[in-house]
Length: 521
Image 1 (cartoon, one colour):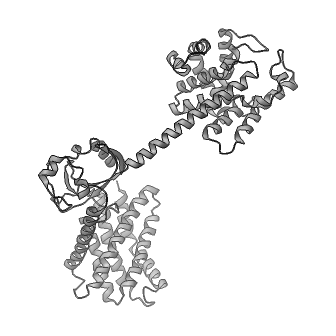
Image 2 (cartoon, rainbow, N blue to C red):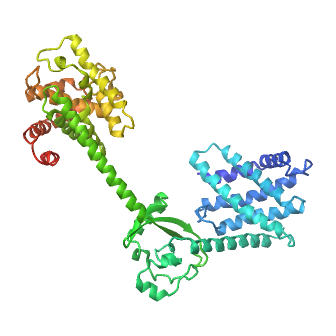
Image 3 (cartoon, helix red, strand yellow):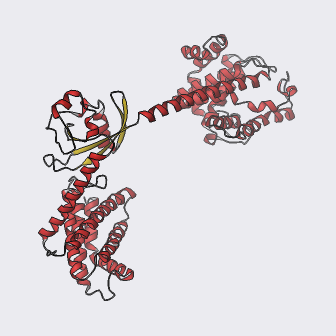
């Protein structure tokens, strides 16, 4: 079976002529090549040379070699060998009188031409991104090596030995630069081998080591290599192994950890070092002190919780005031809220969603504030005209809540429930005649809780129904008035909901009403 990289290699080699024409055309149009650029055969050989290096990288990935990418500012040995091909081409172009700025400009079009060929393969976005990343790394590193080759014009650039030497010089320069960065950054940095042992560390990381380790290693810098098996990272970070597994399996590059009483955010990256026994499976760990950030986040979370509690209390009081207008004691909103929350929990919603439903449900009838008392508290059956007036409370509630300035997410959800809790699954409800899943799930849940409580409660116009009669209604209305899945779940646990309803009635004056209800479940 042809792999992604084999496919790319075959395609590049099969389209050498097309690549050659593209690069030459780009070069002539932009002035990087003279109009009479010579035989295409010479440029074809150049394309083949550049392709050799790129395809070598593709082949190395296909064979699962450790290829470093732009995560680290250094080259792997495979990249050194690949960039050697570009160094050789730089020497040949220099001999043809093509100046450095011209060849670097030409490399832009080499890069573009290869990307166009990859794009022609019609790969998935993920596969194409993998190949494009390797192309970019190849040419990014190649530009550095090419510049150095042009500056060293006294050596025969056609020598393979020289090309490799130039590429290795770039490698050494980049390693030295990386070591300088790791030693001087104002954060603890450590190099950890494949077995989890610390092999190198900068002076900031040294300060975190246990006293006994400091005594044994003395003065410390990045270039002082610790002995293999001397100090394991678990002696510093308890949860490093779990973080490292996430890094390897899911490419999660950072997580939060704690060393002593200090909170850090840790960043992981591959590190190819020839200082430690040519080990290319090392990992660089960089730690950033986030103690102040954690304190700030904790303060924000506490403030958020305080505001949420205040919102919940205000919403609950508003709900009770609204219900008192229709002759209720305020227990209706408590019962509907708890029943809706329990049904949401049985349905499988998470705790956050369950809490949201319980919090905003008391506002489901907020629009009733606009309904005249003589209609709202009428003891007998409503006329069709009066019922039309009552129906307007859904739209009024929605407009009232939606019209608030700087409204919270809770108020947004409350407005949806207020608007849709009288819609029916079969589309015969009000105010919009919505049906099925076009009705918000939260509104479908509250609809069941609202009707359940209304049927079991005494109202100015009716006496409470028996539980048997209520159960029969839900069985008949499943798939008509109510979401069939929710209705069947409600019917299955009907006795539990009846018990919850009566328990709230009996214990409404408890000091801790919420805890009392939770204990009843």
